[in-house]
Amino acid sequence: MNPEMRAKASAAITRHLLECACFRNADVIGAYLAFNNEVDLQALIERAHADQKKVFVPVITEDRRNMVFARLRPGAHLQLNHFGIAEPESRNREFLEARELHSVFVPVVAFDSSGNRLGMGAGFYDRAFAFRRNQGAARFPKLCGVAFDCQRVSKIEHKKWDVPLDLIATENGVDDVQRKGIEG
Image 1 (cartoon, rainbow, N blue to C red):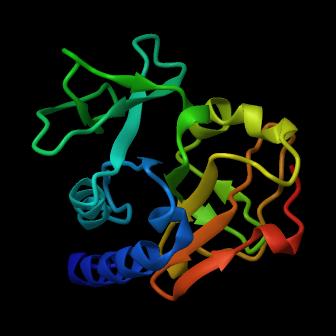
Image 2: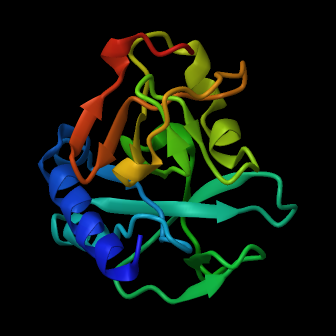
């Protein structure tokens, strides 16, 4: 997608997410700061701040093995991590455990209609939310994949360590994949 198409689709995805219960009913959300060609959630983050929601974004640990969530305050100073992804500056970070988030908006490289996703391949989200695999049907936090519809594929093989999504938001709307028999 060219930059103009990405911006237009990102705006449509944000509109869908702002109307979704996963945003409206969450006081503490996990989001991400877009990297490369990911869906840009900046407008959603700004709206969350305006609505007095607490926003946390992924931070890669110093050993580069795990991901934690740090508070993103309005106007926060950012720094680039080892992968070139923006994070809140390291001084005075406020962290929150992944299980304390209400909803998490997850970047996606590819997804299928069953809620399986491919990320960048390092497994950060699967490790951070591994606790969800043993929660049964009422899994929290809710994981909402965020992608362009062109990233949809027919099937992604589900591995035992994969943590599936509950919802998928594209420029065409938000799809509740939990009703489609997600493995987990």
